[in-house]
Image (cartoon, rainbow, N blue to C red; front, side, top):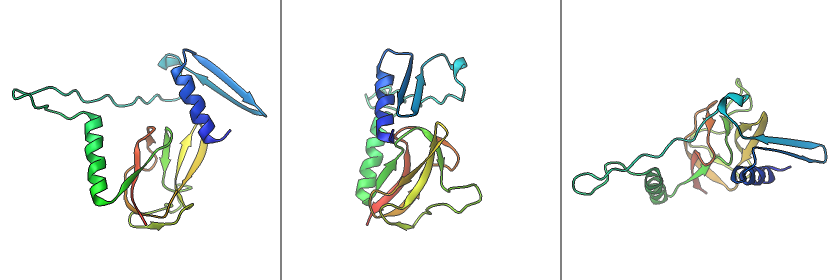
Length: 160
């Protein structure tokens, strides 16, 4: 099963009313379960909750919503001519193939299409992610060895 099919299966499972699903095909088996936190075999990481926007006396919000902040950040990146490469899955972000190996890329590097950017470990699988286009690394936004959520920004890049 390729990653796209796996993500489709997980998305469908999340939207379904099922609490458990086992999928088997050609020697592959995947089991998905929903349940109480105490039943999980590994740590549970929840998505951060949104900031509540409360109008001040003049009717101006005191805090921007995460969606508004994200839109503002994307507008600023567009003005700089950069874009974000976001995590395609939940997993642990690794900058190098091994703890004692040099990182795949550094800030300021020019990267060719197909070059490995990072590894995301998910469900004990090491998934190498490659550049979809030639780019320059403007900023590395994720911290090595830390969990990232689906859609979390990993890199700020500029197309070449």
